[in-house]
Image (cartoon, rainbow, N blue to C red):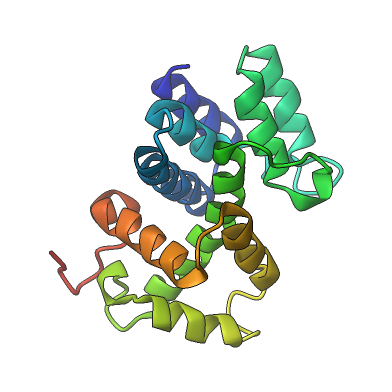
Length: 190
């Protein structure tokens, strides 16, 4: 698998900057967890990058990620990558059995939520986000209402990580790539 080819595939199917940045954010979080869990950073990262590449074209439960899976299969992406991507959608019925698949499920919704929390901070910075601020926003059902709080909680549980620890890991990964993800804001950060 080639990271540049994966990026080109994402861009071919995803036109909005927000969804591209989400793919990049999940990629960096997956790479972070691959390092911690002894996984292949490139495989885990590409899986994160491509997990929603088909969403703009097929945004329904009948389409995403099923249509994307067909494209990935035709392009020769390995079964473990395709299975993890299928399993990130709870409604797909595909079980999450590998550490990579469990991590993708745990990281996807949480990464999007943490990003949203950062962008509503006064300086729009990931450096102003702490696990406690994420937990507080999780209680606000009107905030990022499309994000499944149960999915976030279940993802951490399935991964065997305490929710606050999972949130802290996602924040750490996003901070490492704040500039590329547009999350440095005006706070600076170190």
